[in-house]
Image (cartoon, rainbow, N blue to C red; front, side, top):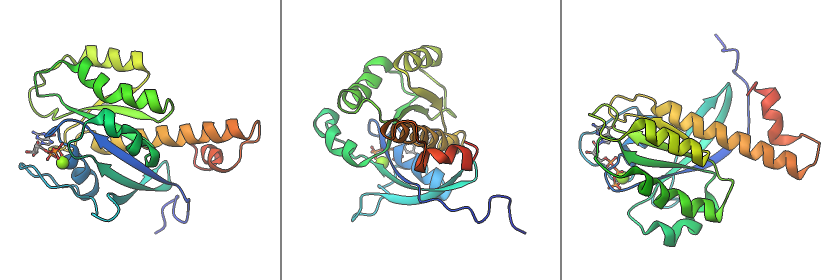
Length: 202
Ligand SMILES: Nc1nc2c(ncn2[C@@H]2O[C@H](COP(=O)(O)OP(=O)(O)OP(=O)(O)O)[C@@H](O)[C@H]2O)c(=O)[nH]1
Ligand SMILES: [Mg+2]
């Protein structure tokens, strides 16, 4: 039997980058999202050595969207941020919510260089490892992210909690940002990407 959304086709294809300190669970989140698996040990980068990305597809309100996902090995972020922003359409900043740490400087370290270079790229902050005892102040983090104008959610790559939602949230932010940019560039005519709002009830 065909689903109500079968037969819908889009050419939508976005690139997503995961950043964050060593061991916060970047690769585990990607594996949970794409393969629905989890490993208690650190796992090697899943991206293809040629492209640097691993490819998957998600359905957003019935529209199939191709995602290319990349996670960054340890780098000095400020030095390489412009290189990574050339190609990517959205960014997930990951931290480990089970680690005792000062979260504002952490978010600033990753977020401020992004905003300095590209003020429009969608960003979502993720507190991963929510299955463990959470040692950060979630309320304060949510308030800080809200002040910065970015979404914040908690995930667990181990249980899978909120992992699909995190990728969908960022993807929907990307669609909205692209549609708004296209609409602005075309004046009042809302063609192309922005039609996804009506075509797919976004
Ligand atoms: N309990 C728990 N452990 C997690 C979770 N996500 C990742 N881990 C564990 O944390 C460790 C590091 O996970 P990785 O996914 O390799 O972390 P990473 O951010 O990719 O690390 P690097 O590639 O070294 O930068 C592994 O032992 C994972 O099993 C989670 O949600 N809950
Ligand atoms: Mg990794």
